[in-house]
Image (cartoon, rainbow, N blue to C red; front, side):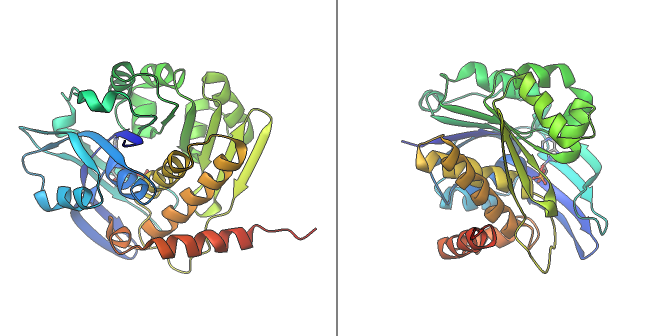
Length: 302
Ligand code: AMP
């Protein structure tokens, strides 16, 4: 039985980085997430695209075994995002967000989807995240992502959904924006007070920090000598994190730590090329190799 359900955006992205540009390429939070998670477990996707969305993109997900039974094709344009990065690749500047068919999307969950043990509410309108949460039977673990666009525009709905989830996976700048707290340790503690018992703060090239009640775990980013395009790193991280937990079927501290490392491993591949291009040529062997390198990097002998 499929283990992981995701609701989020499936998008066409236009991206500028100091190293190149890409127009209308495959993107979206649910896309990166599900492709990444598919290396670990079976995934069901809930989203909407317009009739203008290339079938070839959907075929890529279907070929990884992603169940597209919850993907609607609606009249109207696909969600489009345009973003730009300077030499500090940690911060995306949004140039344009066009919701298109997401503006009046009502997720319809196939009956079979309602009982999926792991749920990821990827970056999308928090009202849609709440809607999906109402439609599922209580999963074993619900995790949530968001971004500045929704923190600014939908703060109340976001706080309502935060109160109902187990884990929150968020960027450092967005954690600061949400809590109005510049110190990340304090920001994480404040978020724990909002509801989730696991807070994961992604810090781009500085790694990721997990805070649970009274405990911290930190992983560095994989030391890459070339980062090309960070778009999707966060969602790919979340895909590795949730995929690893679903595959393990455990939520203890050791499983959570391993999941953070797998998240970091997966994100390190995505940033090496535009769109999903690096993931498309990724092998299980490469994932295992980087996982071992992480273990080695983090080892202390005394
Ligand atoms: P990240 O992993 O944070 O780099 O997410 C990048 C992806 O998020 C891109 O492929 C975009 O299509 C998607 N995205 C950007 N803005 C939004 C938004 N407001 N809601 C949902 N998805 C978005």
